[in-house]
Amino acid sequence: GAGVSQSPSNKVTEKGKDVELRCDPISGHTALYWYRQSLGQGLEFLIYFQGNSAPDKSGLPSDRFSAERTGGSVSTLTIQRTQQEDSAVYLCASSLSVDRGYEQYFGPGTRLTVT
Amino acid sequence: AQSVTQLDSHVSVSEGTPVLLRCNYSSSYSPSLFWYVQHPNKGLQLLLKYTSAATLVKGINGFEAEFKKSETSFHLTKPSAHMSDAAEYFCVVSDLLGRLYFGRGTQLTVWP
Image (cartoon, rainbow over the protein chains, first blue to last red):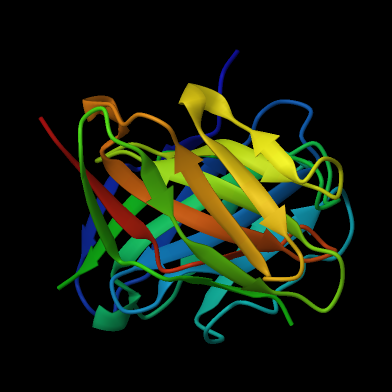
């Protein structure tokens, strides 16, 4: 079956611009996570959604970052007024549930470069 | 708080020799632990997971890991390395809400 998909695969933007990154989770997965992979910080949790509950935003690095999930499916991560330190690979993962025993399936990522 | 420490940033082995990637964890409660692999320009793939069942966990591609509570370790092993095993490996601990905390990764190089 189809896995987690992300778009675009690569995004180059100028400092100060806003960007939107999209994630399509596996159908039927109620939990959706965003992570960031950067050279300096490694892989770090950003935000997760579970069903219709309020998202856990505890990992977002600043208020320039936000995310939404429409209809319990597709999610969009938005970065406003991008900075060079935002350059990273943004990974999305989905799982059947939030419970820690469930495997998270990762998408291929979006490589963001801020110039 | 949950965290993992991968003790080696790079490991090099010859094809056909054993692989050992070391990981120590810290957790406030009984942990769920994972090993993920990332091949160049590919997504993260789950190799195996420990969730408080058998302490010796078998994964895909001949990998296995042993959970040792007394040593707070979860080392990844494979008896015989293959060229296709060359990749970056991440030891991961999950909190109760499923948020994953990644180690810094171990780059495995396999020489012919």
